[in-house]
Image (cartoon, rainbow, N blue to C red):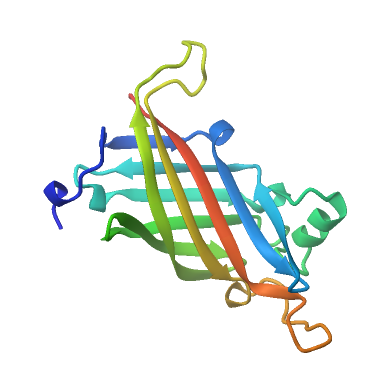
Length: 192
């Protein structure tokens, strides 16, 4: 596919730094198969390189797993423990894209996710939210043109060796295998 076939309004090719103050890395997982627990990671960094051809764009990101926040300090400590993320042994989760492809009017971001010592392919539904000019104050540490992206998907925690397959009465998992991922990313164009 060529750039002429992929049109994104106000598209700008360049290298962008993820702005953690205006971005979010979130997740949701079913608990006891009756409700969802939502959480986020507060510390992360990454780079988006938008290519001259949008389908040749790249993403890399690193997430500090100790920064997990589910709204409950006791639960957060349990999630950080060797029972789940084991942040002492595996302090980071990383993502490296391997491709971007058109899917109708939308996009899919393919990549490799490394978590808990395991690397697996992951595909995320990608929405390009838009590109905007530099409208921030001169003292803004993240001044520059902006781009916005939303990526959503699902991973199997058991495929990455996170947690166990303990069941509750009735034979269902106490904690679902599937983890929903929601990334709301705002990035700043590098001018150097």
